Length: 294
Image 1 (spheres, one colour):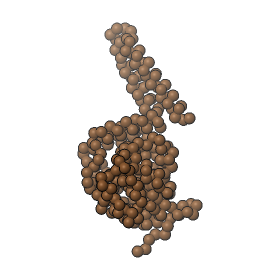
Image 2 (cartoon, rainbow, N blue to C red; image 1 turned 90 degrees about the vertical axis):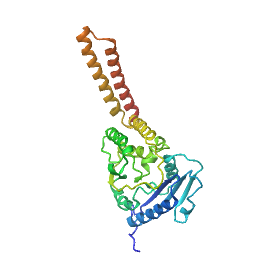
Image 3 (cartoon, helix red, strand yellow; image 1 turned 135 degrees about the horizontal axis):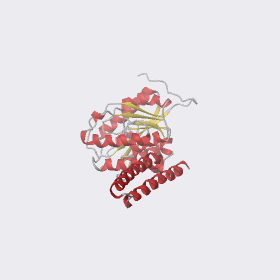
Image 4 (cartoon, rainbow, N blue to C red; image 1 turned 135 degrees about the vertical axis):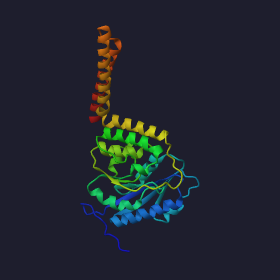
């Protein structure tokens, strides 16, 4: 079968990508199929590649056959989380470009052949799922978190935590200490890319029904996502958090002050407290911004 010639970067070197496939009790046949499709996608794009399967403490060590399919296997003795699995894969990767994809059959690996060439113009290319493809139980909290993330990043976000994307590893290496071990790794990656000046593209993709049981908790994990977004906003864009909060408290102070003047002809204690709080929150934001710029 004919294949595309290897694609080369501006320096004449062949472009290469390390695909990382985190697995926790996934169907071994689905994992093997994913490895094969990743190889074909890289060949179609003309890229060198490697596939790293990270077994995150699965019962019975079921992925021994991936080596025969041309992938490398990294094992955790115990389950450490989705983010920890990706971090282990990143430490083992030998190429500067990283591709990640879930091994549950929900994402189309063949679309990576279209996403890889886009890295000439973007430092991250995200496969964006349609809202209609996401179950109703997870759709509402994801919409809220995505809108909040878009506000904090000052950029529209089509899919905050897609598990299929290609990115340059410097996005991770430059902020390694803030990446969590759990599912908010992918949302953190999106926020880091958008708030650190990297070019990010969102490509619509198909999203299929999961093969096997999901380990995402519909209540706990959105709470974790929300906490991580708040932490990232304080880390990258503190003024976009503190200034609206200061204005809101200031508005409450004005409303309360008007009420005090109309009823008592003087400002009450609560009005003064709200005024002081508004100024304090504003100056906290300024201090956080100054610290952030150092």
